[in-house]
Length: 259
Image (cartoon, rainbow, N blue to C red):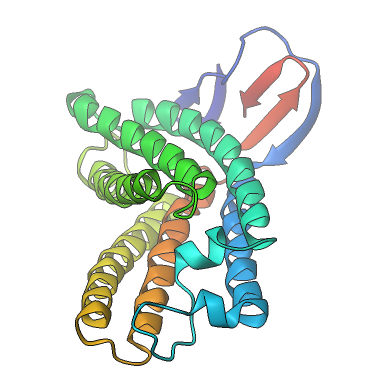
Protein backbone atom coordinates (compact mmCIF):
# COMPACT_ATOMS: atom_id res chain seq x y z
CA UNK A 1 0.00 0.00 0.00
CA UNK A 2 1.16 3.54 -0.75
CA UNK A 3 0.86 6.35 1.76
CA UNK A 4 -0.83 9.36 0.19
CA UNK A 5 -1.60 11.53 3.18
CA UNK A 6 -0.83 11.64 6.86
CA UNK A 7 -2.48 8.69 8.56
CA UNK A 8 -4.20 7.35 5.42
CA UNK A 9 -3.01 4.73 2.98
CA UNK A 10 -4.43 3.82 -0.40
CA UNK A 11 -4.14 0.50 -2.19
CA UNK A 12 -2.80 0.48 -5.75
CA UNK A 13 -5.47 0.44 -8.44
CA UNK A 14 -4.12 -2.63 -10.17
CA UNK A 15 -1.67 -5.17 -8.87
CA UNK A 16 0.53 -5.21 -5.79
CA UNK A 17 3.78 -6.39 -7.31
CA UNK A 18 6.68 -4.11 -8.19
CA UNK A 19 5.90 -2.29 -11.42
CA UNK A 20 8.14 -1.13 -14.21
CA UNK A 21 7.03 2.50 -14.18
CA UNK A 22 6.91 4.43 -17.43
CA UNK A 23 5.79 7.84 -16.24
CA UNK A 24 4.05 9.67 -13.43
CA UNK A 25 1.29 12.24 -13.86
CA UNK A 26 0.02 14.66 -11.23
CA UNK A 27 -3.60 13.93 -10.46
CA UNK A 28 -4.34 17.65 -10.20
CA UNK A 29 -3.29 18.04 -13.83
CA UNK A 30 -5.20 14.90 -14.78
CA UNK A 31 -8.38 16.20 -13.14
CA UNK A 32 -8.15 19.54 -14.96
CA UNK A 33 -7.44 17.74 -18.22
CA UNK A 34 -10.44 15.43 -17.72
CA UNK A 35 -12.78 18.37 -17.07
CA UNK A 36 -11.16 20.43 -19.81
CA UNK A 37 -11.80 17.86 -22.53
CA UNK A 38 -15.62 18.11 -22.49
CA UNK A 39 -15.51 21.84 -21.63
CA UNK A 40 -13.50 22.88 -24.67
CA UNK A 41 -15.26 20.27 -26.80
CA UNK A 42 -18.58 21.77 -25.73
CA UNK A 43 -17.47 25.34 -26.42
CA UNK A 44 -16.23 24.27 -29.86
CA UNK A 45 -19.56 22.59 -30.69
CA UNK A 46 -21.63 25.60 -29.65
CA UNK A 47 -19.47 28.16 -31.47
CA UNK A 48 -19.17 26.04 -34.62
CA UNK A 49 -22.94 25.54 -34.69
CA UNK A 50 -23.54 29.29 -34.33
CA UNK A 51 -21.01 30.20 -37.02
CA UNK A 52 -21.68 27.53 -39.62
CA UNK A 53 -25.13 26.04 -38.86
CA UNK A 54 -26.91 29.02 -37.32
CA UNK A 55 -30.29 28.83 -39.06
CA UNK A 56 -30.80 25.10 -38.63
CA UNK A 57 -29.28 24.92 -35.13
CA UNK A 58 -31.49 27.70 -33.73
CA UNK A 59 -34.69 26.72 -35.59
CA UNK A 60 -37.68 25.52 -33.54
CA UNK A 61 -41.28 24.65 -34.33
CA UNK A 62 -42.31 28.13 -33.19
CA UNK A 63 -40.26 29.70 -36.00
CA UNK A 64 -39.27 32.68 -33.87
CA UNK A 65 -35.84 34.28 -33.81
CA UNK A 66 -33.20 32.74 -31.52
CA UNK A 67 -29.47 33.18 -31.19
CA UNK A 68 -28.34 30.04 -29.33
CA UNK A 69 -28.64 26.34 -30.22
CA UNK A 70 -29.75 23.80 -27.65
CA UNK A 71 -27.19 21.38 -26.24
CA UNK A 72 -28.64 18.51 -28.27
CA UNK A 73 -28.46 20.53 -31.49
CA UNK A 74 -24.92 21.73 -30.81
CA UNK A 75 -23.40 18.36 -29.97
CA UNK A 76 -25.53 15.91 -31.90
CA UNK A 77 -27.07 17.25 -35.09
CA UNK A 78 -24.11 18.34 -37.20
CA UNK A 79 -20.59 17.43 -38.17
CA UNK A 80 -17.80 17.91 -37.23
CA UNK A 81 -19.40 18.88 -33.90
CA UNK A 82 -20.83 15.44 -33.24
CA UNK A 83 -17.53 13.72 -34.06
CA UNK A 84 -15.53 16.03 -31.79
CA UNK A 85 -18.00 15.60 -28.95
CA UNK A 86 -17.93 11.80 -29.19
CA UNK A 87 -14.13 11.78 -29.10
CA UNK A 88 -13.84 13.98 -25.98
CA UNK A 89 -16.64 12.13 -24.16
CA UNK A 90 -15.10 8.72 -24.88
CA UNK A 91 -11.70 9.95 -23.67
CA UNK A 92 -13.01 11.54 -20.47
CA UNK A 93 -15.20 8.51 -19.73
CA UNK A 94 -12.13 6.27 -19.65
CA UNK A 95 -10.24 8.64 -17.34
CA UNK A 96 -13.28 9.02 -15.08
CA UNK A 97 -13.29 5.25 -14.56
CA UNK A 98 -9.88 5.72 -12.94
CA UNK A 99 -11.24 8.62 -10.89
CA UNK A 100 -14.06 6.34 -9.73
CA UNK A 101 -11.54 3.83 -8.39
CA UNK A 102 -9.68 6.61 -6.58
CA UNK A 103 -12.91 7.81 -4.95
CA UNK A 104 -13.67 4.23 -3.93
CA UNK A 105 -10.43 4.07 -1.91
CA UNK A 106 -10.83 7.69 -0.78
CA UNK A 107 -14.33 7.18 0.65
CA UNK A 108 -13.35 3.88 2.26
CA UNK A 109 -10.66 5.71 4.19
CA UNK A 110 -12.28 9.02 5.16
CA UNK A 111 -15.98 8.11 5.44
CA UNK A 112 -17.44 6.38 8.49
CA UNK A 113 -18.37 2.72 8.03
CA UNK A 114 -21.89 3.55 9.20
CA UNK A 115 -22.39 5.52 5.96
CA UNK A 116 -21.38 2.58 3.75
CA UNK A 117 -24.81 2.52 2.08
CA UNK A 118 -24.66 6.19 1.10
CA UNK A 119 -21.08 5.74 -0.09
CA UNK A 120 -22.23 2.97 -2.42
CA UNK A 121 -25.05 5.17 -3.72
CA UNK A 122 -22.55 7.95 -4.40
CA UNK A 123 -20.23 5.66 -6.35
CA UNK A 124 -23.07 3.94 -8.22
CA UNK A 125 -24.67 7.24 -9.25
CA UNK A 126 -21.24 8.46 -10.44
CA UNK A 127 -20.94 5.34 -12.60
CA UNK A 128 -24.43 5.61 -14.11
CA UNK A 129 -23.96 9.33 -14.72
CA UNK A 130 -20.80 8.61 -16.69
CA UNK A 131 -22.48 5.83 -18.70
CA UNK A 132 -25.52 8.03 -19.40
CA UNK A 133 -23.29 10.82 -20.68
CA UNK A 134 -21.68 8.39 -23.12
CA UNK A 135 -24.99 6.96 -24.35
CA UNK A 136 -26.69 10.35 -24.83
CA UNK A 137 -23.62 11.49 -26.78
CA UNK A 138 -23.37 8.46 -29.04
CA UNK A 139 -27.13 8.02 -29.56
CA UNK A 140 -28.34 11.49 -30.45
CA UNK A 141 -31.95 12.62 -30.69
CA UNK A 142 -31.68 12.23 -34.48
CA UNK A 143 -30.52 8.62 -34.13
CA UNK A 144 -32.88 7.38 -31.42
CA UNK A 145 -34.93 10.08 -29.73
CA UNK A 146 -36.45 7.82 -27.03
CA UNK A 147 -33.09 6.39 -25.94
CA UNK A 148 -31.41 9.80 -26.11
CA UNK A 149 -34.17 11.27 -23.93
CA UNK A 150 -33.90 8.40 -21.44
CA UNK A 151 -30.10 8.81 -21.28
CA UNK A 152 -30.40 12.56 -20.79
CA UNK A 153 -32.92 12.23 -17.97
CA UNK A 154 -30.77 9.51 -16.36
CA UNK A 155 -27.75 11.79 -16.60
CA UNK A 156 -29.57 14.67 -14.90
CA UNK A 157 -31.01 12.52 -12.10
CA UNK A 158 -27.82 10.57 -11.43
CA UNK A 159 -25.65 13.68 -11.50
CA UNK A 160 -27.93 15.36 -8.94
CA UNK A 161 -27.91 12.27 -6.72
CA UNK A 162 -24.13 11.97 -6.98
CA UNK A 163 -23.44 15.63 -6.27
CA UNK A 164 -25.89 15.79 -3.35
CA UNK A 165 -24.71 12.53 -1.79
CA UNK A 166 -21.06 13.46 -2.22
CA UNK A 167 -21.56 16.82 -0.50
CA UNK A 168 -23.43 15.18 2.36
CA UNK A 169 -20.77 12.48 2.79
CA UNK A 170 -17.76 14.77 2.96
CA UNK A 171 -19.50 17.15 5.36
CA UNK A 172 -21.39 14.84 7.73
CA UNK A 173 -19.92 11.35 7.51
CA UNK A 174 -16.17 11.84 7.83
CA UNK A 175 -13.96 10.05 10.31
CA UNK A 176 -11.15 12.62 9.88
CA UNK A 177 -10.84 16.39 9.63
CA UNK A 178 -10.81 18.13 6.25
CA UNK A 179 -7.51 19.65 5.17
CA UNK A 180 -7.29 22.98 3.31
CA UNK A 181 -7.63 21.38 -0.12
CA UNK A 182 -10.67 19.34 0.90
CA UNK A 183 -12.27 22.42 2.44
CA UNK A 184 -11.84 24.30 -0.84
CA UNK A 185 -13.15 21.29 -2.76
CA UNK A 186 -16.28 21.15 -0.60
CA UNK A 187 -16.96 24.87 -1.07
CA UNK A 188 -16.74 24.52 -4.86
CA UNK A 189 -18.92 21.39 -4.76
CA UNK A 190 -21.68 23.30 -2.94
CA UNK A 191 -21.53 26.20 -5.41
CA UNK A 192 -21.59 23.86 -8.40
CA UNK A 193 -24.51 21.86 -6.97
CA UNK A 194 -26.50 25.05 -6.25
CA UNK A 195 -25.75 26.41 -9.71
CA UNK A 196 -26.76 23.09 -11.26
CA UNK A 197 -30.13 22.91 -9.46
CA UNK A 198 -31.03 26.55 -10.24
CA UNK A 199 -30.06 26.05 -13.89
CA UNK A 200 -32.23 22.93 -14.22
CA UNK A 201 -35.30 24.75 -12.85
CA UNK A 202 -34.67 27.76 -15.09
CA UNK A 203 -34.20 25.59 -18.18
CA UNK A 204 -37.50 23.82 -17.44
CA UNK A 205 -39.25 27.16 -17.05
CA UNK A 206 -37.90 28.62 -20.30
CA UNK A 207 -38.62 25.39 -22.19
CA UNK A 208 -42.22 25.48 -20.98
CA UNK A 209 -42.56 29.17 -21.77
CA UNK A 210 -41.14 28.72 -25.28
CA UNK A 211 -43.61 25.96 -26.08
CA UNK A 212 -46.50 27.81 -24.45
CA UNK A 213 -46.05 31.30 -25.91
CA UNK A 214 -43.52 30.99 -28.78
CA UNK A 215 -41.72 34.22 -27.85
CA UNK A 216 -38.48 35.31 -29.56
CA UNK A 217 -35.25 34.53 -27.67
CA UNK A 218 -36.95 32.45 -24.99
CA UNK A 219 -35.56 29.24 -26.50
CA UNK A 220 -32.14 30.89 -26.40
CA UNK A 221 -32.60 31.46 -22.68
CA UNK A 222 -33.47 27.77 -22.35
CA UNK A 223 -30.30 26.88 -24.25
CA UNK A 224 -28.21 29.19 -22.06
CA UNK A 225 -29.58 27.50 -18.93
CA UNK A 226 -28.72 24.13 -20.48
CA UNK A 227 -25.15 25.35 -20.90
CA UNK A 228 -25.09 26.32 -17.23
CA UNK A 229 -26.27 22.81 -16.27
CA UNK A 230 -23.46 21.27 -18.30
CA UNK A 231 -20.73 23.63 -17.06
CA UNK A 232 -21.76 23.39 -13.40
CA UNK A 233 -21.55 19.60 -13.68
CA UNK A 234 -18.03 19.92 -15.08
CA UNK A 235 -17.16 22.34 -12.28
CA UNK A 236 -18.28 19.81 -9.69
CA UNK A 237 -16.14 17.05 -11.15
CA UNK A 238 -13.02 19.21 -11.40
CA UNK A 239 -12.98 19.31 -7.57
CA UNK A 240 -11.14 15.99 -7.78
CA UNK A 241 -8.08 18.21 -8.36
CA UNK A 242 -8.36 19.34 -4.71
CA UNK A 243 -9.62 16.04 -3.27
CA UNK A 244 -6.47 14.33 -4.57
CA UNK A 245 -4.08 17.28 -4.39
CA UNK A 246 -0.48 16.13 -4.05
CA UNK A 247 -1.27 12.66 -5.37
CA UNK A 248 -0.02 11.18 -8.63
CA UNK A 249 -0.87 8.34 -10.95
CA UNK A 250 1.95 6.00 -12.01
CA UNK A 251 1.39 4.26 -15.34
CA UNK A 252 3.35 1.25 -16.52
CA UNK A 253 2.98 -1.65 -18.91
CA UNK A 254 1.70 -3.76 -16.00
CA UNK A 255 -0.88 -1.51 -14.44
CA UNK A 256 -1.67 1.67 -12.52
CA UNK A 257 -0.67 2.79 -9.07
CA UNK A 258 -1.64 5.80 -6.96
CA UNK A 259 1.12 7.49 -4.97
